[in-house]
Structures are given as structure tokens and as C-alpha cells.
Image 1 (cartoon, rainbow over the protein chains, first blue to last red):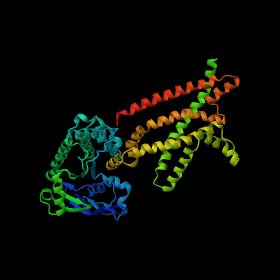
Image 2: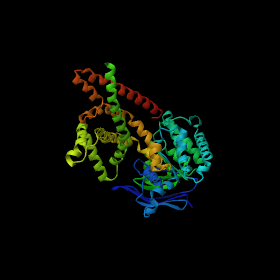
Image 3: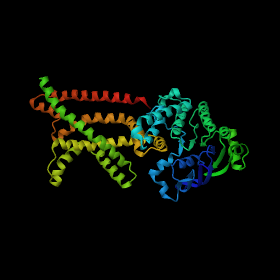
Image 4: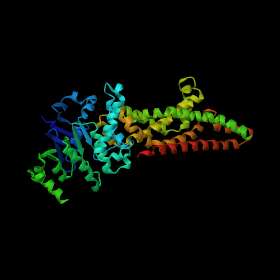
Length: 261
Length: 212
């Protein structure tokens, strides 16, 4: 059974159709890259998965459980959506770190709030919170940021901020980690450090969906690639095949424009 | 002479400061409520709130003081409010409307990405407001709020139109005795208060400097 199963997702904003009949699935431990030009609906698709947008049609299943069904309003109740979001993590293009918190606090804030909902929180408060702190530091360590734990976002470079954002998303142990153009807001010399971290996550078999404009990176890191254009999936397949030997004419055109740049 | 005048003016200053403090105490939270109204998704509510804000901001505060004090008696034969109470009520409503617009600007100025980051991390709406947005709003609104606070100190002088014995009234009372300087002397008290306020606001702004 795939960990993620997306069925016939459609999304329109007013009369503009942004996503049309999007279906794909993802196996545990695999990385999926979504490529395509700006405005092709990649970001909207990620936002649908994270319940930041509500699709007009379709279903989203994780581990066989229907998280969203456009025909079933019961799946769209706000109280439940909040829990369902936790199956997914999202790393934003613009980081969106909380400026008033240090790197470590950014990573630990959400786990600290969530742990309060546990029935044994009152009895074990101290050890639970210590555990969160420890895990937070460990995650920052994995991101190569041990010495930046007490820095505020404005004291960090873009690449460091994005790595904190990745640690923050990982802290909630999502089933599927989504990246929305994680390096697009970075200076070229800083993209490497972020890509390196994502590459390491792929090697540890983190299930990921990466929206990216870095074709070589997609080819090397992803297992599967989806090429989207004007809201539809034009081509999907093994990463190397789609990027090196695309079957569809539109994919070829898109990729050739990329290699020219 | 200077001492006795100073003591009399200080009596008025107490009234001025009471009005100042009570206005802030009630108008700061009320302004937040009004700002939520003016951002509501419910169109009729938003329209009503925006109309009220327009009327309050669009008419002189001095006129509002007189309407609140004399209006109920003249129009509906109701008993008059005590003068000081009428002054507080007017100031609270008036300043809450100004504050609401400052809050609205502050809240809408926080990037959407902050809210979305909170949502994606499984936070509730209230957790997002209190743990993420609020302090960013406060940081943003300190300078415009500071302006309003200092304006408020001086606006309190308007309540003399309904004979609340604040500091200007006290200063003016010396004119009957042939002395004009006590009235001018009141300026020193206003300067002292706005000086203290300025220092406090600068200190607070620096406190908020730890993040950007």
C-alpha cells in the first residue's frame, strides 16, 4: 500500500482552473520531485496536501486512511484538519521562521504545544519537555547548526534559516515532508548547503515531495518525478527517465528551456 | 507663590492623569475588539463597525464630549452622567477607534506565511495568535501607539468644556485673580509627562529589538 495516494484532485480559484485531475501515489521512503514552470500548479498542489487550500474535487489518502474527500464534508472539519495536517510537514520557499524565537525555540515550539494535549502531560511535564529540547538540539545538529541554536532568525543566513525550517518541520515527525522550492529564495552560493541536507534526508529514506527548479538535483535525489504544466500532470515516472529521456513533447520543451538557461 | 500654584496645578494634573490612565486601560482592549470587527468576514458587522469608526474619527473630540455629557439629558430626558465619567466614556470610545485602526494595520502587516507556518505545525488559531502573531503585532504598533499616547495626554485638556477640573482649568482659574503665568506654567507639566512617556516608549522599543 502506498503511504500517499492522491486521487483526481481538482482546484479552481473562481473561473481559473489551477489543478485538474491530479492523481499520483508515493511509496514509503521514496522521494518525489515535482517540476514545471511557474504557475503550473505545483505549489497549489503542495498547499492542498497540507490543507492550506481545499481542493474542489478529489481524495487524499495517507496509509489507506481518507484524510480528505471533497464529497465528504466530515473530512473537512477544522478540528480534525489540524490533526491531519500533522501527517505532512511543509518547508516554505520563504522559510517563514518565527522571528521572535531562537532557532531552537522555532524547532521546539510546536512539539511543546502538542505535548500539552497528551493525557500524561501533567505528571511527566518535566521529562517530556526535556525530551523535546534534546530532540530539538539533535535535529539542529543534524542540520549542521549546533552552534546556532540560540541565534534569532535575523542573525542567520538564508541557508541557515532554511535548515532551521527543515528541522522545525522534522520535529513533528511527519509521514511525508514537503518542500516548496526550498532554494528559490536563496543566493546561489547558499543553495548547496540546503540541497545537501535534503540529499541526506533522502539517503535516510525520508518520504518527501520536493517542488524544485533544480533539475540535476531532482534527477539525482528523487526516485520519481512529476512534470506539471497548466495544472495537469503531463508526465510522471522514474526520475532519471523523465529528466534525461522524457516521453512527452511538452516535458522536452520545458527541460530544453532549462538547459539553455 | 510658585509653590502654592504648583500644588493647585498638581491637583488638576491628578485628574488629567486619571483620565489618561483610565482611557488607556479601557480603550486598548476595546480597540482590539473593534479591530476584529473591522476585519470580520461577516460583511454587515464589518460595515457597521467601519461606519462607527468613520463617525468617531470624523468628528471633533470636543463635540463628542459635549454630546455624551449633554446629549442624553437634552434628547431623552435622562439624568446627566457625572462630568468625569462622561469624559472617560467619550475618550475611551474615541481612542478605541483610533487604536483599532492601528491594531488592524499591525495585524494585517504580519506576513501570511507566519500564520500558515503555524497551521502547518498543527497549531490552533488561538495558539497562532498568542504564540506567533501577537508579539509581532505589538512590535509593529509601538511607534504609532506612542504617538497616540502623547496626543492623548494633551487631548485631556478638552474636557474643560464640560468643566472637569483638570490642569488647564486650574491654570485658567488664576486669570480671575489677574495672573496669566499659571496657565502658561501648565506646559511644564505636559512636557514632563510626555518626556517620561517618550523615554518609556524608547525603552520598550529597544526591548523589542531582539528580533526583526
